[in-house]
Length: 337
Ligand code: KG4
Ligand code: ZN
Image (tube, rainbow, N blue to C red):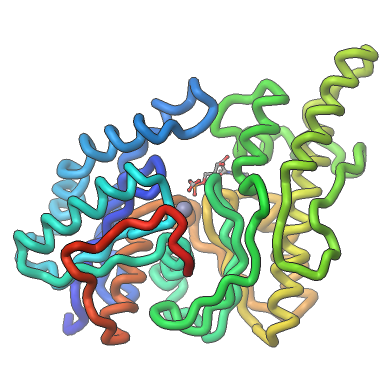
C-alpha cells in the first residue's frame, strides 16, 4: 500500500500496452495489438502502427484503470517507453504519457524498452537476483544484457548484427508458406521434424563475442527451398523448421550460458516473444541446469510487449530515487540501455 502506483505506457512497436504496477505487484495489464493489420505485409508497417496506437491509447488506458478499479487520481507516477522502437509509434506513447503527467500533476519517467522486458519478470517471480544476465529475443530485438541493477546498472553484452531472432522465424515461416507471425507456426511444425535432418549454419558461433547473426541462416534456408524446387527433391517443412530452429536456439542458449559463466552470474532471464518457443525453453532449461544457473522465463503474456513491463521498470526507477524526466522528454529510436 505504501509503494507508489505506477502507470506504464508502451508503444514501441505494434502493441499499445497499458499497465498498472505497485512494487512487484501487477494490478492491471491491457494490450491492444495491431498485428492483424500488418499480417498481409509480412511485417510491421510503421505508419499503420502509429495510427493504431493513436486510436487505441485512450480506450486502453481506460480499460486498464477500470479493470484494476483504479481512479486516475490514485496514480503516483507515469512511466513510458522512450525507446528503442519505431519513431512514430514511440511519439504517440510519449505524447500521451506527457499529457497524463501534466493533467494529473504526477512525475513522468521515460524508460528503456529492453530493460522493461527484464523488469517484467519481477511481476511473476519476485525481485530479480543481482546480478542477472538477460536474453531478449523478439521480432525487434536479440540482446544479451548484464543487469546489476534494473534502474541504474544495465550493460549490453551483445546484439544481433542483422535480423532479430523473431524476424528470422517470420522470414523462414514465409519461405515455408506458413502464416505471419511465423514463430509459433515454425515451432509447431518443428515438433514433427528431425533437427538433425539438415545442418544449417550457426551464425557467429564461437566467435568470442556475444553478438548474433541470423541473415546467413535465413539465406541458407532460402537456398535449400529453391534447390528442392529446382531438383524436385522432397521438401519436408517439419524437417526444415526443426533444423532451422535448432540453429537459432543452439546459438542463443550457448551464448547466454557462456555470458553467465564468464561474468560469474548464476541467474538468467529469457524474455521477448520468442521466449514462448518450446525448443528454446527446453534447451535453455537443460543447459542452465548443467551449468548450475537458475533460469527464469516469464509467462508468454508478459514476454511479449506490454505496459506492465514499463510500469515494473518505472517502479524500480522511482524506488531508486532517480529524477523524473522533463516534460520535453524526447524519444530515441535506438536508445541504448
Ligand atoms: O515480443 P513480440 O511479441 O513483439 C516484438 O517483436 O517486439 O515478439 C514477436 C515475435 C515474432 O517474430 C514471433 O514470430 C515470435 O516473437 N514468436 C515466436 C514464438 N511465438 C512468438 N518465435 C518462435 N517460437 C514461438 N513459439
Ligand atoms: Zn519488445
